[in-house]
Image 1 (cartoon, rainbow, N blue to C red):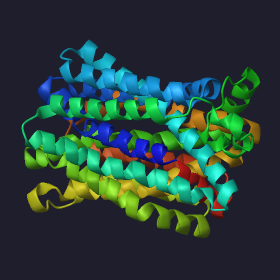
Image 2: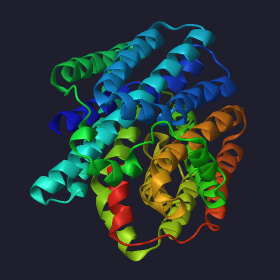
Image 3: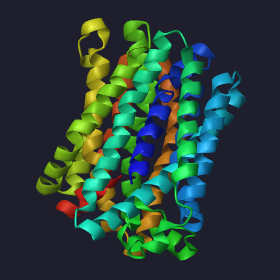
Image 4: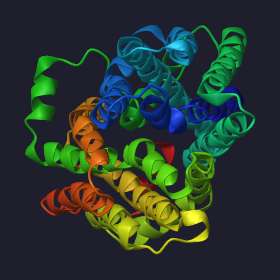
Length: 413
């Protein structure tokens, strides 16, 4: 478990040292049009979120070790390629490789962490949520430090290439650690109960056609996917619209790392108490609707917020409201999945939630990227309509079960 927690920490340091600066590099550094920048970012999200089910199925079939090692190797190659990519085709290929790498190692590490949490609970009686919360906090701590590392490299004059190579070196260390320390055997065979108890966090391997039809013919589940997609399209603006706003306000992207650090710090300090509160006091559907509305308010606030120190107050307001909305709606959305599908389809549905959202981001990113060329008030108003539409769709969902269980599940994710 210590290896898995350290892995999650390192993954996010390497990833977030690069991603916040990708949009500016593509636009200012390589001269791509706004719609093309949006498309590239959407392809990255799709190759990760859209293929999450694939990584989970491979993990179920071959065990976590080879899938994690393959994912780390692909991430190293992707970052190295992106550091020197100069044409649209090579950038897209590198970004797809980076995203697919995460589609391999993320479900493998997360499902193995869930199994180890179950093992720890059975051995000690300590709730698995405590272990999974530590795993989640480690990831957020890495997301806090990664942008700061990227900002430091930019301030020292290393540029985007240095950030990519630094991210690759982090994954070299992760690859070496797992090659030496990660067990060869598939843990799920050691803990048979884990298959049933962690279905919500482990995508189903080789799903049959009846299960696929049952999930994708489920109207309520598809509406949840669409509502959640509105959030993910909005969240993708951290990498697309936020860098443009920071560049416009300050003439530099150096402050971007601090804004990402602010978002991660909020999650580290506020997520657990906020999840406990919302799980006790409000139904999952209400939390989902409220979270989407808060995200929409974050977009609407940008042109209405007066400029603060160095002009960063609108961007900071957007980051804070987006993060608060995320902390409300993500646990609620994941907590609703077990209420909408049968238990035997839970793994497939959990993976499908990410995959459908990834497709939506791919479809929406080019359109939102094209908005970079319109005036700021119009751009932010249109963007605010995306999560607001998701909130309207969420009104049609069942209320869902409250209580501690959905909140505990959300901490695991």
